[in-house]
Image: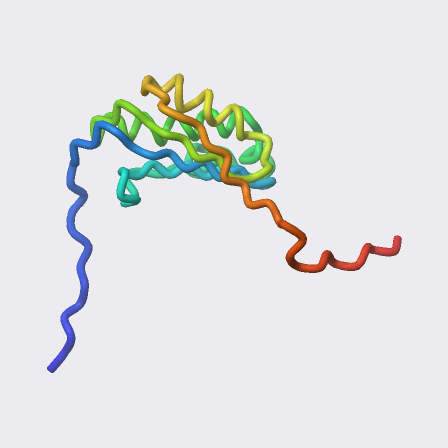
Length: 130
């Protein structure tokens, strides 16, 4: 007996008044993920999907445009009105991404910084000799 293949359902429009925005700001790019309160992804955007390529993906302007794109998409598709923002990473677009969320026209509930900080776990690599 063959196992049935799993199919993804068509994109459905949910009415989600409150959402969570995850901002991951790396040194090379900025990722924005909008999810509902249980963690299911509603929309997402990156620097590359917003039209920036190469080194320009990591700029603060690209982070702002990316955040505006992701949140406005969630606002039109899922009626998102209020968001909580979780920021992770050390990239240049951290603050600008938060500004992009607010300029997209949603209410900001809270901002959390969840950047992982080592408590002297792994040993650092040996310094390069130049």
